[in-house]
Image (cartoon, rainbow, N blue to C red):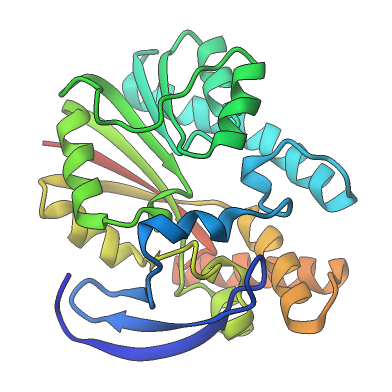
Length: 281
């Protein structure tokens, strides 16, 4: 990860600090890197917001209610995906488990589940649902999981290469790894430019393309099997991007932009977010 990088874009942290961060293009992996990267001891401060929706079950506004409605539908689809890949329920590790809803849905379908979540607020919410989460993967057994999932989590990890090596350690031979991340090559990313909400600096430290995922994991002999679209993400991201660009959410304009993004992606295959299905050698 020490190869040359070229300046790409400057973005603002709209959620917490209002600070500016630069994105640099890593040509070797075909990805973007957030600069400066906050040190691990201060990074947590950038998550201290009631608006950070993945760490709360709040349904205060229409937007939050809509988010959780779509989330409920998506959870069922995610569990169906991992069950079809594995042919049957097995051992599942969800890293970045948030408030535990995905694990709850998987347990209903007879998966043997383990979750990891560093955020105390989210862990407390999960515990109230009967889901106990680990703080790290450090004490988990090697070669133990049929499936590991990271739903919009890989972009947050401070040490990317160490995380990928840890995933390799935890996966069973022929086990599956499911990675969902935003795609900076999507139409909505190009349209909203520095206001694209999925840049989400500095919480998102890395910004991936399909090439980046394939190249990074190939180094640990984890091979990309297929790429799937997350169709709802273009609408969700466009809503937030409208707010960042124009000062308020414009639902009609955001829905139109999300629809156009998905339509263009049918040809380009560059959706707003992708699910990457990878398999361990």
